[in-house]
Amino acid sequence: MSTALAVPRFGRRQELVDPNAPAPIAAAPAADPSPAQASAQGAPPPDSIAELRTLCLARLDPTAVSNMPADQLRNDIERLISELSSLNRFQINAREQRALATELVHDILGLGPLEVLLADDAVTDIMVNGPQRTFIERAGKAMLSEVKFRDTAHLIGICQRIAAAVGRRIDESSPMVDARLKDGSRVNIVFPPLALDGPYVSIRKFSRRAIDLNRLVEFGALTAPMARALQVAGRARLNVVISGGTGSGKTTLLNALSRFIDVSERVVTVEDAAELQLQQPHVVRLETRPPSLEGKGEVTQRDLVRNALRMRPDRIIIGEVRGGEAFDMLQAMNTGHDGSMSTIHANTTRDALTRIENMVQMGNMGLPSRAIRTQIVGAVDLIVQVERQRDGRRRVTQVTEICGMEDDIVALNDIFMLEVQGQREDGILYGRYRVNKVPPAFMRRLAYFGLDTAWNDAVAEAVG
Ligand SMILES: Nc1ncnc2c1ncn2[C@@H]1O[C@H](COP(=O)(O)OP(=O)(O)OP(=O)(O)O)[C@@H](O)[C@H]1O
Ligand SMILES: [Mg+2]
Image 1 (cartoon, rainbow, N blue to C red):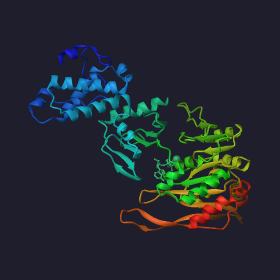
Image 2: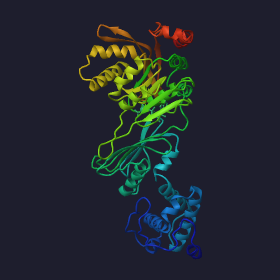
Image 3: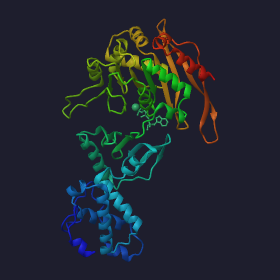
Image 4: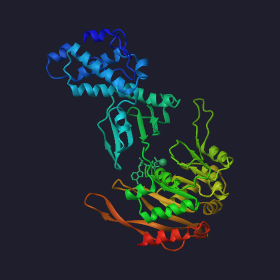
């Protein structure tokens, strides 16, 4: 063993250096009992793992190891751990050694304890509330995970790594950052003093397997005939707004609907953090830019939507309307960019209209309500409401058509409306969709595209 220590290996420091040298992400907790003392006490002291971690990190050359392939690094670290534990007589079993090796590899090459959660496809959201508490969402339910960071410094190191990867800084003077991980997951970080209990990290995991309409039907998010009706709506280039609460599945449904866009169409997407996964060949993706530290250089969604109009788009897709761009979106929808789609944060389809109206008003003071509503009626054809319901399942709860104006009020017609009838023993809700068979106002448009029969068939089948 001692000979191996003397032989320099790739990725390891060539000489024994100060064991308190800074670790790649954060130093391990200090003040452990000496290894000899620890083993004399018999039981495997948890602190000896911390000590072993410090010794290992001191022996690894940060520059060399950060460029090593994960497998090789892991082998190297496992060997190093085993050597160091025998040398120092740490009573650490093989399982603990493997766990430490995994932890070190994750710290050196990735995002530390978050790696396990990032690799688990069943985890859809990760919410870190300071170093000791990390919640996750699985199957629509939030729960506390076993993941803990060693200390605040460990978590800070990981946050800074996330921010640095997208060329941003996060610290007390710049305490909020939106970023994306390499795998496309969306991240928001808030630091103290705004965050009161240590850094907060919220990650919306990027779904490796895109969820299409068929899968949404399998999940019970909507019925097969409803999915067909939505598909017809997309192909007939109706302007669609998807409305719902936070994490209700808006972006997922938007992605699923976007699959029916014809490959010949030029689609411009505008997003705050690019999440859309369009499959078509002719997609132009635009992403906003936050202001620099000096407060300069910001490019808003509104700027991008305006610019998109000059890019000869067939359709414009806005990831989520949240401000003044609502006005430009309506303009786009009203000026021949049919088939445009977006999402909005609202609790009902009626509420979505009010939100659009408020957003337009905020960006264009003095525009009379009636004028805005007329614009909305001219622009939006369909609003689809999604909801994460109390059983944790995400479902389409309402598909509403905008039919026109009645006096000063926008007239709506619910084509599909979910009625929850009860809850099964396993907690899952059950119910049925109420279907309105009255031909929608956009029927002529469907006929123009030769899709009226397809729509009627889907609705007839939905009625059952
Ligand atoms: N019907 C569904 N069944 C199961 N999982 C779903 C369903 N719809 C969406 N999801 C998952 O739920 C999570 C949230 O979905 P999504 O990002 O689409 O929500 P959102 O409403 O756009 O959220 P936000 O308000 O944060 O933008 C994702 O991980 C997604 O894969
Ligand atoms: Mg979204």
